[in-house]
Length: 151
Image (cartoon, rainbow, N blue to C red; front, side, top):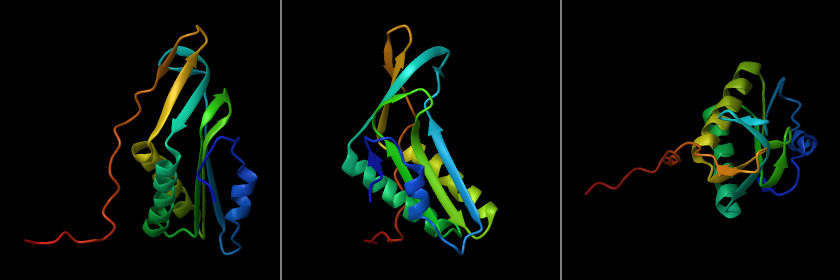
């Protein structure tokens, strides 16, 4: 199973992976490359990441989302490499028994991904210039329930 890929994202495969007849709700979030950023026209974008670390962060985020919300399935995939306008850079698929839980979990997954995933976004502008996006400061994931040792 992969979380980061250089290939175009395949929503159909994620839907098959997460298929669950006990679930009445399916929420899909797709982040796509838009044609502008901070008032400048964008012609495309390039994403880069250290894949072993990024895979781990996404795998842990899926597990955290499953533990935090009453959902049955959560899958996240992110793209690296050069993308064109309109192409999906990230997919979040959540399935649950009820829609509110699926919406809440999907929002949590994408919002938390933005704060934790070590991925770099390099905009390519129509005027020929390029720039890395500042993004948001990364945060550490919450402790996994381990208690700190007392002296």
